[in-house]
Image (cartoon, rainbow, N blue to C red; front, side):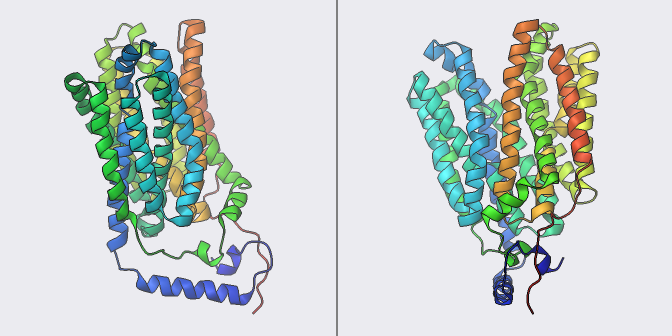
Length: 431
């Protein structure tokens, strides 16, 4: 696409275009071939492994923390729910900051905030300490989590490898979940929950140094030629039909994931399945997602991203519908965990890949962060509404049907997305 097609509305001089092209040429000539993108990919994957992996083990702390505070499970669960909202709503702001000043700087600060959250949770044994710790952890996830890592990777990885790179980064997040769950449970049993949180804080503190590996020379893109500012990118995005549809579909992803992780153990218990089967089913989700996220990222580079994403949502609906309509047994629960794991976070590389298709990689962290905020609102609704429905009806049937209907909705909105760069309004540039 010609640079003139990407110029924002308003008078733009020919000299401004020539200067931008000159910057692109000079920057590109200084970039080492092949080195920076591989290093950034490895560092981004490590960052997601630690931050996302630790996030997934907080369920193991609910019982010991509630016993220490004598507060009941509800208060701890509410604090974790608040963490999800803080994570979601802070992601666009930290993403915009990362796009502007550099992902490595924001990730370093985010790792420090995450560490402070773990320390607060361990050392301030009070309801206020729990909420403070979870709020800081939410901010840490927003500033050193997957949206920052994807943005950094998307800006340096060659376009032909970008989709599979997103899949790799997402896969490592699930590897962190799978690896840290048994280790954390063992540490809680041997050392207690407070010492375990202190040990986990060492991992997040190490990410402050690891973030330095994301430092690279800036790569110029077509969006740099247009000099599309953060405000311009945001204005174009909120008016984009396709971006709005993509963000609406991502709400469904959060709704489904957190409903399952929060309420699957209770659903299985009500159907006479042992609690240990529930933990194994959730572990299988993490294990199989290592493969599923990678495969979805690979498919995103080979076939249509929007169609692949739509089919992922449709298959989720089919699997959930089959699971709760058929007899619930230990075998069906484990099969359900494995099947859902293959589709679990495969939406992330496809969603981020579509955002790059729409707008280019320059503002990926911010624009993915906005879509992720929708995801986190869905997460809150999935957990909260599931509890309300269960308390009112003593059954999850309504929620299962709601999740299936939501899957059909997400399938439809993603299928009609136009997989092409969003057109910017332009005016002719003087020769």
